[in-house]
Image (cartoon, rainbow, N blue to C red):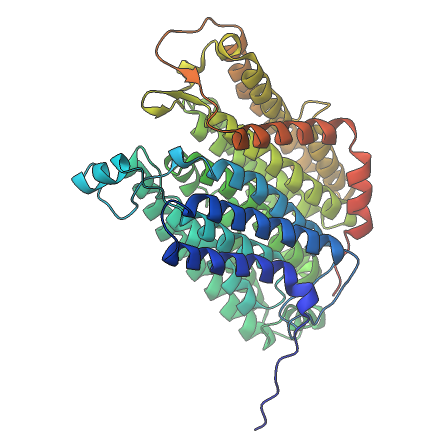
Length: 505
């Protein structure tokens, strides 16, 4: 038996390799550099790696290859768009992560212990969060470009494991943070098991682990259809868990609330791009000829997810939990683009993912600014009169909420209009009707928060707005500009997406 060395296209793989290289440098910095120099060095390495990777993604935007890594990775237009979206969202998320006040001084210490108090008094900072972020970003970039089941699973674990750790690093509410991390880890492990179970059945159906081999088996129709149906079902469970769709959503509110808010922002935005990117590739290419088997299932899940997320969000009194249920509703809206199964659906999904991701980071950035002596204030009742205390912060948050609601002149309106139009063209009218009704329900609780901020008097309970650094200000301003720009002038980005949004097979 002869060994043949693998042939890798390093140019096309370079964005992911740059991010992984930055993560490894971050680990070395953590091990060998003095504590005083670690924060600025880690931040510089992280931002530099993400910027270099984004530049490289731009350079390869017009290149396509099915054999980038021996058939395990595919680079095409949608891959470039999704990787660019992940990198841009990660860049502004890292600006929030740089606020050291959000993270515990010593992750290994027991909450409330003398060891933890000593670490806080000595000014320790957990800078491991930077290389963890880069490892997660690398996994997110690999996930939507994987073209075989093994690479897809490896990417899933690479993006998930750092997030499990990062969710438990909150400075305050340590027990809630650790509970969130444990819950996320356990449910994530179960979803990974379902994913592997589905992969095994797809291999049994097609005798192949590659997307091309599975697609050829589906087109040929020579395999056992029961294996195909079970494989699709269990693969879908793993993917639906990552996007937080009902009934695989239970982790979202608790993890969003318990994790440090910058981590929540990063997780809520970037993970959705990666997970939906993988879903779009799988359903649009591998399972496209088996639409009869998965379309009814996804239609029901999408409708339930939209309605459930919108209705339950009304009852929330915590800002982060409200945004979590809003995220669940948006997962249902995005599933509409998967169900559409046409080019318009792909284009609309890619636009929606980018627009929603930027708006989400901006919204959670605002949450980090409202504080009292004990830290963040997430109780909605204490946000009364925020518009009178700090009008610009309240205006920014109102802009993000209006975008979530899909109000015209925001990116959310263009995203929802595009994705519902694509679904209507494909004949999925039931999903469109459910989506419009859910959007109307969701608008109620978004507007309720706006009324709370601008049309009620502030209560003197120690709540104030604190801007920790210029980095957070940059993240908020950038998110707000993009949210409005994509709503007022969407044509350039829509045209750019249209030119690239074609999967190669």
